[in-house]
Image (cartoon, rainbow, N blue to C red):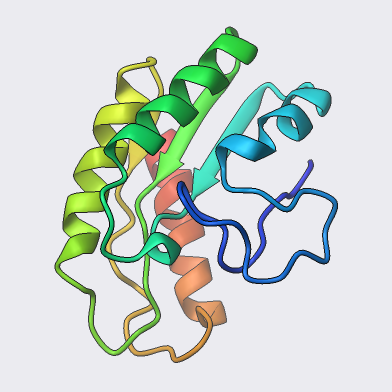
Length: 139
C-alpha cells in the first residue's frame, strides 16, 4: 500500500505542508500513483478545496487517472469535515466528485459526515466509521 495523503491536498489545492515527495494537488500525484502500480486507487478529499468549483479539476483528475491506469479499480470517497458543521458546498463537491468518478467507471462512496465537531483533525471514531462504511459498500 502506498499512502500519498497529506493535510490540505485537494482537487485544486496543494498540501498545506510539503514535507513529502509529492507536493501537488490530486492530479499532480498521478505519476506517483502509477509508479506504485496499484490494482485499487482510493481518493478521499475535497474539503480542503473550500468553496470553489471542483468540476473541471475532478473530471480531469479521474480521466487522467483512468487513462494512466485503465484496469485499476478507482474509488472516490465523499469529502468529510471535522468542523462544527458541514458547509453547504460540501454537498456540491460530493455531487461533482460522484459525477467525475462515475464517468470513468469508478465507484463513489458517500460516508456521510462522521467527523463533524471533531476539531482540527478527524477523530479515531470518525475514521473507524468511514472505514466501516467503505468496507460495507465494497463488500
